[in-house]
Length: 442
Ligand SMILES: [Zn+2]
Image (tube, rainbow, N blue to C red):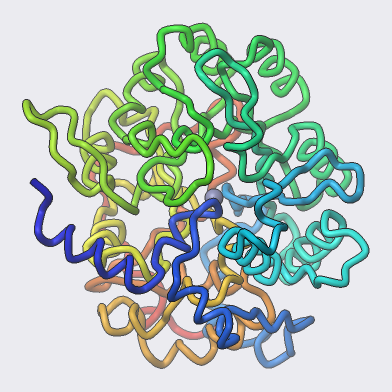
């Protein structure tokens, strides 16, 4: 039987279009469609930051205990239609007016990324905007651009009709090579491909910093025995595996939500692979497979269980991208902020372009939940109109629960991608009560 609180939550999400925010690949529901028509999904895409924002003392304080060169955004989507010969593809349904929901999703995402309908090339405009946004960050900060492989069936055959987006490894690698002062890249290789291991070797040789899967959409069963050689290679190369777990609604693809169960990550973990669970699996429900009679529980609870299992302390990490979108439960926010012993294993990420997508962030909700000081709302909202990436960064620096904030180590992500990654400190650490009321202005 379904937990009554979860049932209420589900109904709330359905009525409020929350599923838009499950991730980049989420669906749009009727409410979101109405909001789009009313114009509230529109990102104003303002240009350079005005000096008043650039030099704002509250924002300057957020940089105080950080080293910009250590700030790697570990969750940035690269997108395109292939109109510049990049090899990117989007599902045909997303351009067809007779698939209004799919087509609207494409529009909303491109508006969030400030790619105008009139752009001569979507692919080029997307990267240019991202580069432009990066200029407002101190030198040294970088973004990890995600490739995204196609969905495949159990026989390893490509299934374009299941594939929402396709971003080839070669394009992610080339884009990061061209702009290596700002970008690095993350490969995506479906392990059911015949040439999966050869591609993995090529990605490692080509400087990929991690490998990324979305099991429910790509149709990857993490427990499949034939994945073992792939895991062995990942472990040997110390290449982290980034996995989207939890709910990824309305993926017009494999639609295998059961494959997004966080507990399935025990398979790569047992093989010694370092796993970064995207969004800390903070959305949706999954079956608690450890129960005699498995029932649905919040996917985040299963992430919590894995994080607290001693065997995974040196292998399991979570990224905090999308966590403070309006559709997460306040209990998730509170726990992520209070579990200071996790922070050495949590990684900053933006899930770009989602910070630019209108309804996903609702600051009033964070204020009501006691996480954000109402006095910060105006600055954050102004920031968002110019630079959604800066908005996302500063929001994460400002949220707090009972005086506890995301510690600075959450933003020192670079260390996790170096050859000898620093192992998370296991000693219970003192609570971080950085800045806000405690620190003197810069
Ligand atoms: Zn994402």
